[in-house]
Length: 104
Image 1 (spheres, rainbow, N blue to C red):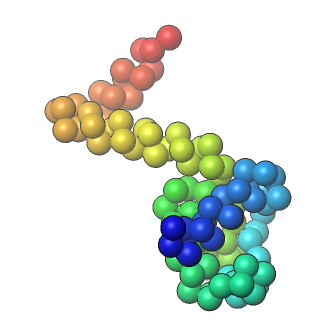
Image 2: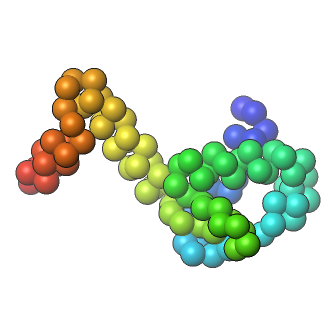
């Protein structure tokens, strides 16, 4: 497994275990790199992965904050897959939402 994926997994686990809660600010990437014993660029690459998953968010001047959980990320990923599958079948996003809202 690539090192940046290992770092992302470690941060994901910390969020899942409650070591870093939603809304909390992450330590600077240079500090994370020192603690994890990796290059700062490896940490930045891992944080970009987590941002794409919806677990963290970058705000200029405010640093990196936790915005979600791995569970929310997993659901978001599956929803994205569903919407993409539905598009290939000819459905629009609003039609998929309508189908979901009609489910018991």
